[in-house]
Image (tube, rainbow over all chains, first blue to last red; front, side):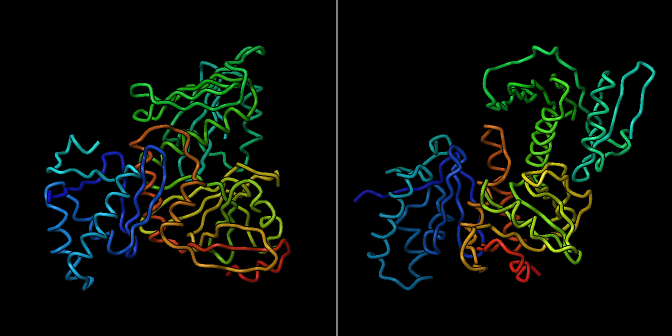
Length: 100
Length: 272
């Protein structure tokens, strides 16, 4: 099973407001809001920490969920955000220049 | 206030949002038009922090067939073009040139764009499609698209309310608080706002309905709706990002609600 790495796309702006991460694509000004779990994952998306490690170290202890269930939910989430163009998902660590 | 330099250049100062801009032209008729148009917002041009030089174009002047506004960054400068004017703005020097027919509509537009660009770059605030009033020393904003009720709620305001604008509001952070300033930009009411300011108490997103009701708005919805109503003309990704951060900062400091109202004066009983 390959690891997944995640990093915010380059042309986005993000800001935490209350418990929500608000994300905007500066290309089309579309605004997204991430719930508490998604916000934790987003905040840890540094391109070098595997998604499974993010889930195990950040999501599982904070939200008291089964690790495998949490990971599958996280996979679904990051793929959806990638389809929206605001997150880059790769099978290898992501460098700055790759987060187009 | 009007001044005339030795070279016959005429100049007035126009102070909106505590950002006084000196406007120069050599056409006495044009300067009188501007003097009447911005009567409540005139200031000493010597106090200006920015400058616009107006050149009156020949009567046949037109740079296009349509009214579409184009604002683009060209190197260190911004260019603005519409059917009735062409302008340049240097944000570093805070100087610009405008070529238009001698009507105030072109300068109205240029002023809105210049203020929007300055506020976007400094991150201090924005111009908003919104009515705004001061009541009991506090400013209230009523934001919405055309038809949402900005002019209606302005017209229904009680006698003790001071109108800042029924169309375009000016929001700026001074110190730790956001303030709303009056603007000369009027909607269907056709009346210039008062040249006064007050700390911003609440912003309402307007909807017309059968009953008066105030509803909460989530931060994400507040930012999204706010951005839809912010006047921002430039297709520039870095500035769009700054406007987003400004909108988030605003939402973190100013209470945001949705106001559904029926068009009678009772709605003002909810605005306190």
